[in-house]
Amino acid sequence: MGWAFTTGKIKILSDGSPWRPIVHVEDISMAFAQALTAPKAAVHNQAFNVGPEGENYQVRDLAGIVNELLPQATVEYVGKNPDPRNYRVSFEKIHAALPGFQPTWNARLGARQLLEGYRAAGLTAETFQGPSYTRLLHLKALLASGRLDGSLRWNALVAA
Image 1 (tube, rainbow, N blue to C red):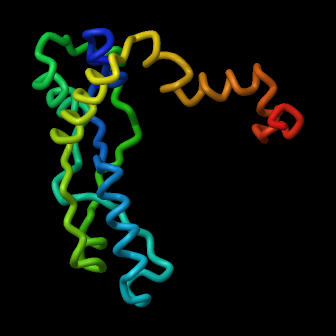
Image 2: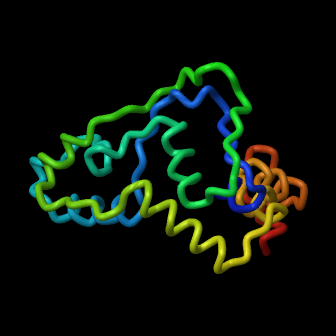
């Protein structure tokens, strides 16, 4: 959505076939809150895929959702090979362990929220592609300023 909004291009870095599970941070937060109050036997030493059933998407389908909201954007396949990383997961386990867990978000609602937020903030391509939105660029900026040392630890002398 960020690329589509700021550049008019929906970049797909593969052939679009890889699967990705989608979950909203509010739904993740709700799962944490419910896990904290759940019976210990239901959650102790367990790992859960957090999300609503049906929220596994192929990358090309996510691009389609973005394109529905920004029809003027063009879809560009930058990579031609399939990405070997596939993350199609089941959310059955969390729903069984936490029967009250009822996610409220899906990919379309999340994409719409991002678009509205980007519009409200006046997001530009320069800002989106800069250190505020790109983790690696942010780390490089912190290293260059001396706020992080070579082992990516905060430099106490600069912070003080």
